[in-house]
Length: 182
Image 1 (cartoon, helix red, strand yellow):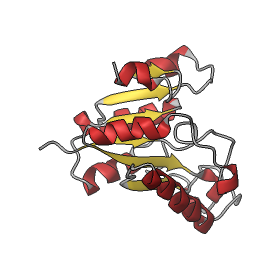
Image 2 (tube, helix red, strand yellow):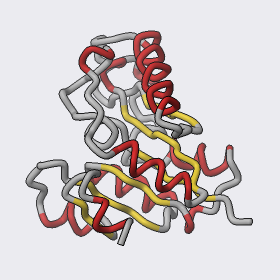
Image 3 (tube, helix red, strand yellow):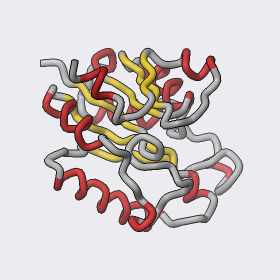
Image 4 (cartoon, one colour):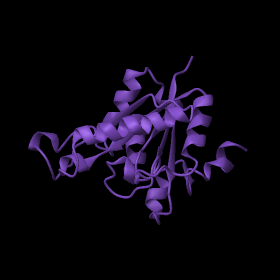
């Protein structure tokens, strides 16, 4: 049996990107995210979040605050009968934090978080999907050999080269209904 997953970026895909969200009071789920994730789960995909969190390196919030929000988010998915298998995050930034952490392998567009998930769960990369809202998400997925790359524009005006980095472009997660359910 082929093991497969949907890798999801967080800010801009799971929640509205208000910039450096680390408190549940500021966390606003994107309309339709639970339905889309439930659909993929029913199709046999694991759901794995891969998120850059440079706010930690910038000193805007702590690792503990990120973990608290993550636990709260995963519990909200569970209430909707959706299992988030794992959340990977990169707390680094090339311009902030300790020198040794500035050139990490985990910060997208590097594929480190995706590769870790592929290895940890014995996944077949070519059968996996990446859903992100930035070109860096698509580049990380390509570098990891992910079979399908979906870019969600979430109202952003993205340049053509960003749009070309994906196999499919959705206006929103909610708009996935036309793609997935037809």
